[in-house]
Image (cartoon, rainbow, N blue to C red):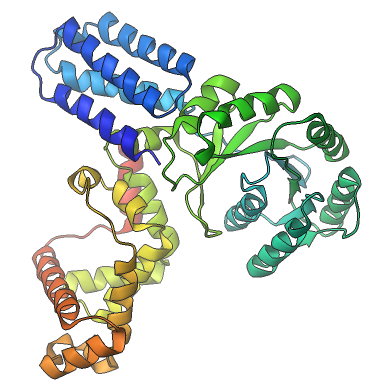
Length: 445
């Protein structure tokens, strides 16, 4: 979502990094470009004005222009202020001393509340909680069906009362069920409208009174741009929500909503969703997002995603093979499937420091992962375990079986050779596992 903004900011700040000396004129020019980049990203005008003023005050007021590395210091100031604009630090959910904790979701129709309810339930279950979901969107006929289908898929209970038109009563009934069944979290999905109106707000107020939620989260569609900030302001005045879930972060929106909502409403972004899959919900870390926008990568999130995508035994087995300098196509298949679990390839690439900028303008083809998997699955067990036996005739058969070309099969075979060569070079030294990498990263922060 932040691609255009990221490109603009990296271009401006990249010109400052290598400068051994900066004048106030250089800084003024850079800030003007930053201001234009933020406005083009649909960030609220007042937010942009305050942001640029804060950066300028820090840059000029701390003798940055006289320092030995003024460019780097300006970049750090922009990073810090960008992180502050996005919310400062990560904001956790509040959990009740006596369960169940109630989380009320609100927002306009089409923002993705129902899907967000299921995603949040899955996230909380992975975190060791026992969630349930209340289907209180009684205005949209398909909402209950959608939620029940997601509940069956995730094996998470959904409490609903078909035929009812009393959302507060349904919410109260769901809370009683959650308490009786020992559920420690109840997520309440509510109705939306195409725009903010009194009927919507009154229903939300009544549902809130019925269940007394510990968290009220506004679900905002990042694709709605600046209008999302206006919606957030209206909801904050009437409902006083505690935090925000921003959906469709993987879209081609300019990013203004995410960059403006905290400054305008005072409520932090707690979660971001960057895909349609139910696993595509993650805690929103302002500092990490600021680093990604400025092309610094996001190693911690990358490592955490890798840990989630593979179990400890798989990590240990892969590490042993790295040390031995071995790499079969079964290993290749495991690693590619792990990457697919981590989310979109473009998103993963953006987390690797420096790589996103090197691949700027390059079309990251998500279908390439599917082609690789198809080629490997077209191999026999012997061919996957001993790729050296794959001759010309076998390559032609594999290409036919996978719906690809012999050239694509050859590219994959060469890629495996290159990776194995690199692994043999690494085998003499120690290869840290994911847990130790996480510890090192966190220690350095």
